[in-house]
Length: 410
Picture 1 (cartoon, rainbow, N blue to C red):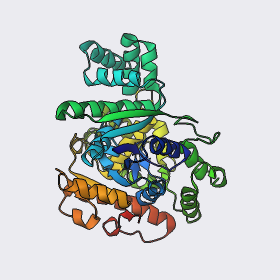
Picture 2 (picture 1 turned 60 degrees about the vertical axis):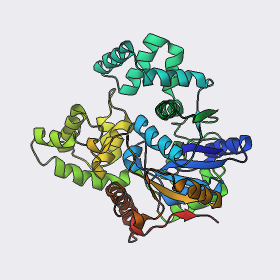
Picture 3 (picture 1 turned 45 degrees about the vertical axis):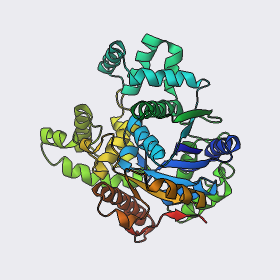
Picture 4 (picture 1 turned 180 degrees about the vertical axis):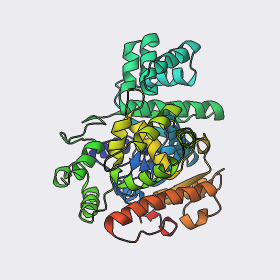
C-alpha cells in the first residue's frame, strides 16, 4: 500500500507527528508520500523556512517521498490546492489518501463533497444569493448548506481542516469517477489546539501559534511542541535571522503596485483583475487604498485595511502574493504539467523507480533537467524571489534555485 497525505509543515509540529505516527501504527508496511507546498503556502504568504529544510523535517519522521505542490496552486483556492496535491499523489502511486479533520463523522464530509460535486440548482442559487448580500464564498456556501440541508451539516464547513478534507474527498471522488478507479480515503481526528489558534497553550499546538512565537522571538516556548530535529533547524534559522514572515515581502509588493497603479484608475483595475482570484471590487479597493496610503508600507497592515465581510484575510493575502509573483487567472486550470520531487529516502527512491516508466507527466528530480518546461521555469523564478528575500534579510548572496539539489536520505 502507498499512502498519500497533503501537508505544509510550516513548520512541522507535534500535530503532524501525531498524524504520521497514527498512520504508521495502523499501516506499518505502507510507503508514505507527502504532497507539500513549496516556498509559498496556502494561507497566502512565504513559508517560514524554505521547502528543502521542511523536506528534511518530513524525512526525519520516516516520510518516504516528498513532492512539491506548484506555487500557483498553493496560492489558489482550496479546490485548486486539493486538485494539484491529490492528483500528484495519485500519479506517484498513492492508492489511499489520509488527512486530518475536526469532524467526528467523515460521512458528513463525504455528503458535503457529493453535494458540492453535483450542486442542485437550488443550492447554487442560494450560494449566489448570500454572495450578493456581501458574504465571502466560504461563508455563503456554509449559509446555503444550513438553509437547505441543516445547521449540523453546515457546521462541518466552519473548521479549516474540514474545509480542506472536503476538497480532498471531492477530488478523489472525481478521480475515481473519471478513471473508474478505487482510490480510498480516511480521516484522522485532529487533536489539541484549533488550526487558527495564535498562542501556544497545549502540547498539540497549531503551526500558527508556533510561527507567532517565532515572530515574537520566543524560540524557547516551542521546545517540546515539535521533534528535536525540527527544533534544531528552527533554532539555527532563528539565530541566523533566516525565518521568513509575511512583511518581509512588503517591498516587492510595494514596487509591483507602484508600477500597476501608475495608470488612471480604470487602467489600473483592468491590469489588476488579470491576477489570480482578483475581482473588480477587490482590484478597485487595492488601487484606492494604495494611492491613498500615507504610512510605512507593510503587507499585513495593507491586508487589514482591505479585509471585509466579503474578503477574508487569507484570500486577500493570496491575491497579493499572486500579484508579487505574477500569477494570472489564465495560469490556473485543473492541469498538471510537471511534478517536482523535493526529497526521498531509499524506500521513496524505489517507489519512484517503480512508477516512473508509466508516468504521463514530466517528473523533475533535478532542477537543471526542467529547463524545457515553461511552467517549471516560472516555478524556479518564484523560488528565486523567495531566495532573494531571504538573502536580503541575512545579508548573504542567495543561491539560485536551479543549483539547489533535492534532499536524499540514505
